[in-house]
Length: 557
Image (cartoon, rainbow, N blue to C red):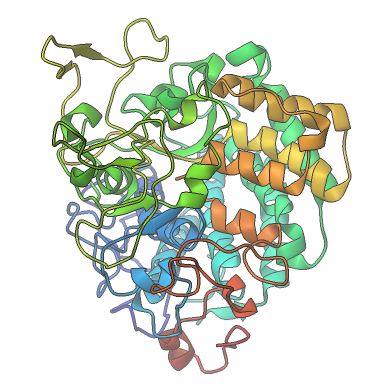
């Protein structure tokens, strides 16, 4: 990925939105490594902040750590939800956590420009390869189109209206603003073309997106079609889910294609479950971004998730999780913990959690009980080591044990410490899933519940397949409700940047049936309160409107 020079036309994060698709500084098309290098930029634009290490950024004016692509997507989807709290007093992030953001939130500006910057990289690649008709070029162009579609999907989901430009624009042409419905229609057409015409490989090489990832993104688009376009497309979502499921049948857990062990999907060696990974029968990660602690360094991605959930106030030896960082800045809400409380001790999806503060007992020591969920934030002070809440660890730097029975490459010593067979590194080597097969199974079940489409028994079977893999007891038909689906999606997909979208789609984020959770609506209100309808979308940043006054702002801002 190194050695490629990028010119976006974005001189700062408050520039003029001049995202020219034909910038000659991207790469030299006469270079024999042109295609590989420039396509790598389309991937690295999601994986890292810049090409000169974790401290560099593609987009000037943005902090390279806070503004890393997947870290921003995580922040805007998780911290405003009923799953996580960010306890540091960081400007911008506190407003996201409490759902009190406004048009001058600098973090939102960073998200908007990071997404546009990545779209520009993909546009540049597509413009430079427009005349290449050989099979390899067509395959690589399809990958770039899917990666671009992922960024436009995030624009659609987070901001609704979006700046829009493709590789076909003339040099110097400014982007236009598409309405949410217009962008939805374009994305549907783009992804249908790639998937139905089989323009992308069904068996991609490791680290690259293939047919499963493209169709998985299309299924996610259809899952949210009612929000994005005004018309539900539940049957279309189920059709896409069935296509993907059929391609994975025969291997993995009970022949479903799911990985046999849930927590291994978020471990240092989860590359085996990625597209092109070694575990072809358990190829559950349909679309993911590859990371390596020496070659792909970022303060976003898995480094951010692992280090943030490791907490020195929870007596967590960070070395046991394969991480030398200990940021102690993410906690789980009480509402998140209660989705597991009293359900089943056999459910493995919370096995790495530490929760429930036990004050000093007769021996004078204090600890964290691994089974008690009763703890919650008594108050949110914004201090660097706020007590309370649950340390909800899921992504780790651990590696699987040789037996691959759900355990880890760790040996318990006589003194109670562990000897680990994996290093504790500054940067994560855990790949980050974007879409997993388990999500596809749950999508089908939700489409039955919300759209009254598909097969009732299959909807129950699919959600129970996911629950059995986790060790949870089976649902009955009476559990096939909006709340039952939403609770299960949270238990399965927490920390995977889906929660805000799920809440909005099910009327639980804003509106008359919205739910309330800790600190929702006010950082000073532990019990939470209701929020305004406008919060279903983030505002178009002030700098964007200033640069192109013809652009419209989202309602309520």
